Amino acid sequence: MANEALLTTEGLTAGYGAVPIVYGVDIIARRCEVTVIVGPNGAGKSTLLRAIVGEIPVLAGRVRLNGAEVQGMPSNRLVRLGMAYVPQVANVFPSLTVRENLEMGGFRRKSGVKEKISEMCDLFPDLKEALKKTAQNLSGGQRNMLALARGLMSDPTVLIVDEPTAGLSPRYEAVVWDHIVRVKETGVAVIAVEQNTRRALQGADWAYVLVLGRRRLEGTGAELLGNEEMVQMYIGKRGTVAAVANATGTQEEADRESEVGSKP
Amino acid sequence: MSQFFETAGFGLVTASIIALSAVGLSLQFGVSNVPNFAHGEFLTLAAYGLYVGQQLTGSLLIGALIGVVVGGIAAYLVNLLVVEPFVKKGARVVVLLISTTGVSLIVENALGGFFGNTNQIVALPQPVAHHLGPFIWTTTDLLVMLTAVVAITGLYLVLRFTKLGKAQRAVADNRVLARACGINTEQVVAITWVAAGVLGALAGISLATSGGSFGPGLGFGFLLVTFSAAIIGGIGKPFGALVGALIVGLVTEWSAFYVSSGYKQVFALSTLVLALLFRPSGLFTTLRGPAVD
Image (cartoon, rainbow over all chains, first blue to last red; front, side, top):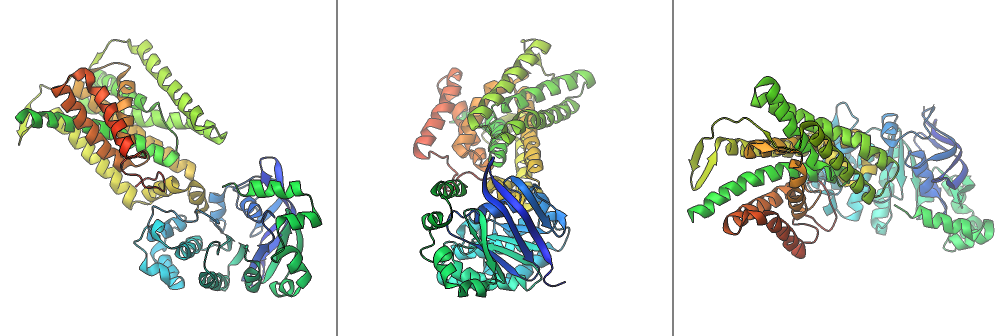
């Protein structure tokens, strides 16, 4: 069923240790849609994703994946339930070859690994030539492609991607987003966190604006892009943590998120 | 010159034993990122397993098999009961270092208390010398070298070509990402500890049969050369440890012949210091840091 909700969070509060970074966040990710989460630096975007995928503790609220409650479940078990996660940094295994990276992405598959690798090479043609190369010898763009392909190897219903274009040239940004849109067309619900807000909203079917760990706005990508005041305030060039903190919260909150959120 | 090669022959036997121990240590460190100072006890426990097995059955082979099982189980238990609980609580490396040293002391003293501090004798067949080119080896020497070659080749094939081996390398590279791929990282780490225990056990059995007798300090005394070889090769790089073992094995035997056997450990450590002066991260590491190769 197209557009059915595959992943939802209800009142999700999470952080590092007992200190919350995101507070009571509700989001919905639907099949065949790209849902993006944008916001200024230190808004808690990556923290939200890490809580959803079980890498940091959920302090309150629920995460539902394909209808099942999964908050607090370790990420290796979430893979079995249809979730794939592509972290922002260290998103490939550097000493493994491209083929081995893809095999690890399909670790839970009972069969069809070779066929799936071939499918990924069709979707990401750059990888076909590089199958025998170790991942540490790939360019930044190729690594991000490999990271996306690795995430798709398990046939996920929900693909969670943290800053897929971080550090890439504008040309590669466009290529990566083109691939993300193609992935959603295969029936996957894609959730992406992005710093390049304009680019992300262009590719988004639905977007949430996160500020100081709280959901402030939501709408279609086009709606948010058309809201000039919102762009200037939250996601434009002037949408720094300090500016937003002055408008909506305290500097201490912003500092804390910036500091903790930047830890590996 | 012939003595040089004969000594090199002994060096290759010593290198084989060091390699079994150092490759296991380095593999376990690469995958779990935990420095294990109780590694020597896997050697000691396996030697006692061999001794007890031989006493009970009269068979050296059955004794060796029991020794291997004992080494594997000991490594599994050290990880399960000591290391994992500390890791889960976020203990720092120094805590793990002290706790594994504590395990080593407990095991050594417990064995001394139970079996006594005198050396135990392993009953061996009459040694037969084989002249192979410039080298002279006994049957035991040849078996020790064959064991090392088979075990380390087997490990290479597992790491390179099996799903488990690739998962071990993936966990060594990035444990968080490995989990995100659906890999049960705790299970992979536990299996790696068992593999390290088995390799250590083979080293302990080789050491006991080469020397003919051993005491509770067997493994702890061997820990220094094991660490030297592992660090020279680049700790966390099991096949670097193989080359480290070769260097340490040859240097110690040549030093024993040309200088004095009392200086073996001095030369092993000097080799380590010299190697680290030129390659501080070991011979086979890159700037990217440790990884199982």
